[in-house]
Structure formats: C-alpha cells, structure tokens
Image 1 (cartoon, helix red, strand yellow):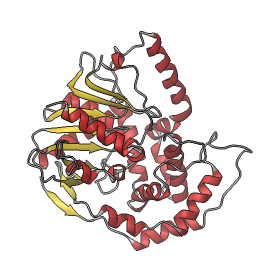
Image 2 (cartoon, rainbow, N blue to C red):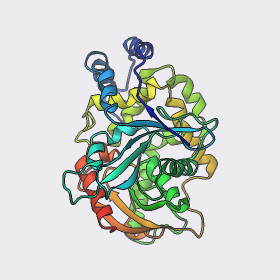
Image 3 (cartoon, rainbow, N blue to C red):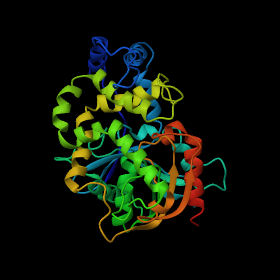
Image 4 (tube, rainbow, N blue to C red):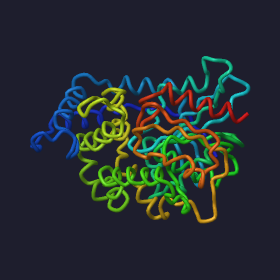
Length: 377
C-alpha cells in the first residue's frame, strides 16, 4: 500500500462551466410567505448566487486547503482514499481519524486541523490527524458499486494501517458517527470513539422512560420533515443524479437547505453561522470533482447493508465519548438508553450548536474532544 502526496487542482474549464451555469440560472415561483417551509428559500438562494458570482474566490479556497499535507492512499486492491495527514511534532501525539459526513467534506475541520496537531496548551493532547474524504467523494476513488458505512469502516481502518498506525482514536459526526460505530465493532486498532451524532443503535434501545419516549417523539418528528433526502438517495440516487449533475444551482439549493436547516441559526433567513464562503467552498468540492452522485451512493449502500442496527448480541465496547449538540439532526436519546449499545465513559450536553459541530462551534467541539481523550489516560 502506498501514500502519494497530492495537491488539490483548480480546473479553469470546469470552474468556468460551473460559473456559466450559475449565471444562466432562471429563478421561479414560490408560495407566498414560504420561508423555508417548502424547501430552499428563493431570496436566500438569490443572495447566495450573487455572492458566488461576485464575491467568492474558489482558487483562494483551494490554496487555503493546500496549506495542509494531502495524500491519496492505496487501501487495498488499488482503491485510493484521499486524506489530509497532518503529523504532530509532539512525541506523545496520538493518531486520530476524524470523519466527515454528507453534505460535508474535510472542510468541516479546516479551522481546527493545526490546533489538533499542535495545541496551544502543552498539557492538551496532540494528534497525528488523518481526515479522509469518503469513498466517492471529492478526490477519493469512486467505488464500482455503492459501499455502505460498514464497508467504509473497513476502508478507514485499512487507511490507518497503511499510514503505519497500529492504534488510533476515532471521531465522527453524520456518516462519521455511523461509520464510527462499525469501526468500534469491527476494528482491532481503534482504542476510543468520540461521536457528535447518534448513529448505530441496538435492538434493546427501546424507550422505557418518559424521557426516552419524549426523545423518540422528537426524533420521529424530525424524520417526518427532514429525511426525505435519505429515502431518495438510499433508493433511487441515479434518477436524482440526472438533475443534479447538470445543475450547480440545484446542488446549491439541495445543500443550502440542509446547512441552514440543520445548523443552530438564530432565524430562518440567517446565513449558516460559518458564512457563504465556507458553504460555497464545500459545494465546490462536490461540483469541481463531479462527485455529487457518487457521494449519494453511501445511502444506497447503507440500505443494501441492512441499515443502522448493531448486530444482535453485540455492543460497542471501546470507550465512547458523546458530544450532544442540541440542534443536531441525529439527536441523542437519554444517556441510559445510549449506554445499552455503547460503552459511554464521557458525555457532554452542549449549550448550543447543530449538525455541523466543528464548523458551527469549533471551540466547544475541540475542547470536548480534548477532554475526552485526556480522560482516557
């Protein structure tokens, strides 16, 4: 297995095609007083397009990401994962795999990469940081057929082995927390798991208390209003691809609705707390690599694998830390319920924050991960 240094390219022809399509987009009607109740808001998307055409600098965003060491790593059978691999100068640094989800990317951790590797406080834990792009995403290879989160967990574990790490700490949100559950179940290398979303769940996680029932009712309400994308991408992603692969503004609307709706914003028309430049840079990672469609395949792969269930009779026994953000899409149930499936040794109920934790609240996110890891020793 080999790790080859990689530099993110800027393709002027691809960038020009995207810009032309954005400029030519024709807006259309929406219900009076719609806000975000029916999907992406037209006024918001008009502002986003204006910034895209007149204020956003994609080459500068690429240059910023290229300050970090990128690699493409053969994880077996000639399949390559792209990753950032930032080694710490600290002799006591621990390997850390930090995993993004959908519709995110490695950009989610852009503000904390160096701080993970070289903490300001010498007493804080330091990490050799590995941040892979999911299979089918960005600069990772496209699988020949959909791979679900359990299959990705095996590739991630192989990635850490290919980079020379016999043991590592894992952190993940969104798909990262689901994949992390499988890593915790299947990997002999992982030593600890930190999750910022509720992923795998076991059959005995049935509600037993009024608090359990209240969580279930809230989770079902979120499912009813927020997860149609999951059903579509998990069943008929190819049909969606014919529209999205031809429409940068379509991708932008599909993503913007999630970033606004799943973030802890102060009002329905607010920008995400991290701003248009970050939102557009994340979108451009998908658009310039033509990976919107193959990025949806993990949903189909999850359904083909059998869903989110921990196998009967199994429990995630590695020490697990939970960072529970109040506006997350994947809300945690009460701790006692989670402990039926996980060896929870650390739990933090965050005062604020949503689904994109490290983007929205990097200080809270970073402090909790450090506290969890420090408490393991």
